[in-house]
Length: 170
Image (tube, rainbow, N blue to C red; front, side, top):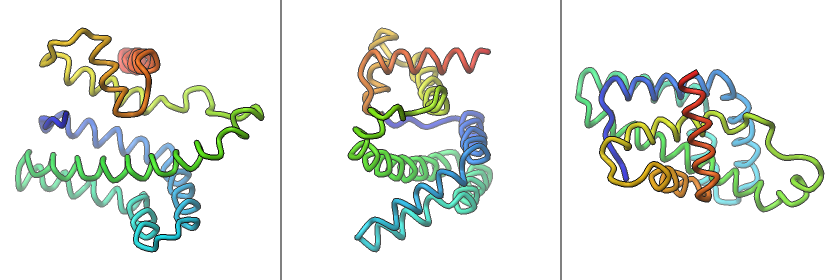
C-alpha cells in the first residue's frame, strides 16, 4: 500500500535517508558500482551507477524538498516514492547477487554484522507507526504485511519492527 506523507513526515524520511547516506553512502555506491561492472545489460548498469551515486541522491533529495515547497505535497510524495523504488530496486538486485553466492559466505563464519539492518528496521517501524492508526489489522498482522514487502517472514518482520521501535523510542 502506497501512502502519502505529510510534509513533516516527508522531511523526516528525507533526513533519515541523508543520515544513511552519511553513514554508508560511499560503501553502498562502491558495492553498486562493483555490481554494475558485472551486469551485462548496459542500460541497467548505467541506471545502477547513476542512481546509487550519493551526490545524485542528495540532488534528488533537494529537488523533493523544493517540489514540496513550490509545487505541492502530492508531487513531492510522487518524487519521493520514485526515489525509494529506485533505491530499493538497486538494493534488491545487489542483495540477490549476494544471496546467489551467499552459501559460502554464510557457512564460512561470514554474514551480516550485528545492527546491519538497523536502518531497515527503523524504516519499517516508521511505516508501521504511519499505517497503524488507519489499519484494522492486529499489530502483528500489520507488522507481517510490512515485512512481506521486504521478503521477511512473519517472525522476522515482528522482531525487526520491534527493534526499530525500540531504536526510535530510545
